[in-house]
Length: 307
Picture 1 (tube, one colour):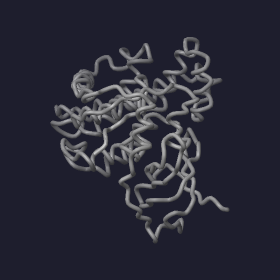
Picture 2 (picture 1 turned 60 degrees about the vertical axis):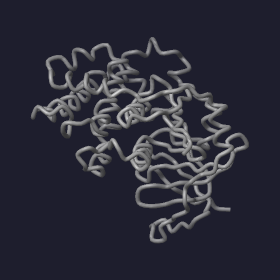
Picture 3 (picture 1 turned 90 degrees about the vertical axis):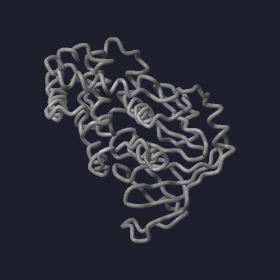
Picture 4 (picture 1 turned 90 degrees about the horizontal axis):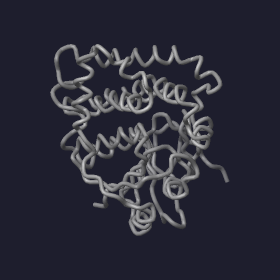
């Protein structure tokens, strides 16, 4: 099997989410560090336009969105499991809480408390990217954002009331990673984080245990090397389109796949796979060759390209 190649940058909270998955599974992987802001020409050569961080490449298969990445890692490397106590579908559903209810106000605090310190190119990029933030009123909104972050911190703390080491038992899993990565972001970006977690002994002990999960065996890789690997590889994905899907699509139909929250850049390609959980499309790039790009179904819009 081809190497796992993670396209990311170290300050990305969602990349930390995947790095911890790789650490929990004790995997070796190659690290391509991408720019924080657009343009990202080498990444776009692989994804066709998808610009969110991170992206996982395995040969000529490109996996977008941490939910899709988690599912693929679990399929290929089932042990140790991301779901040591079971309940995978419910844990996946909880990503709607961690990725939006917890992350969004935390990201607002990270931007709102540091606007004067953020380099202008990064700030302008994020203004265009984070359409859920009202940048003009971020500073006035800080008390509300602090209150919303406190709600999620309290949920995590209360889940640990039974004395368990992790949120669902004695071993860490994806549910812990989902709850931890917004706190990791707060630690790195919000000066008042120690105040927010003060007095929460259970939460603080759990945070230290999560830090020990680590990132697995990380080795460097250049974007040129990653593109060459994609160019020389062949996707292992099989064509499987659900004939009963409400969209009425068939294999090889030309479609676009677009996130429905933020970073709404459509990716154009020929339909390869479509189920209630996943969608994949095949596309060609002069530098990356022919690749198959994979997305989760939830949270993505699929549209037929006419003509």
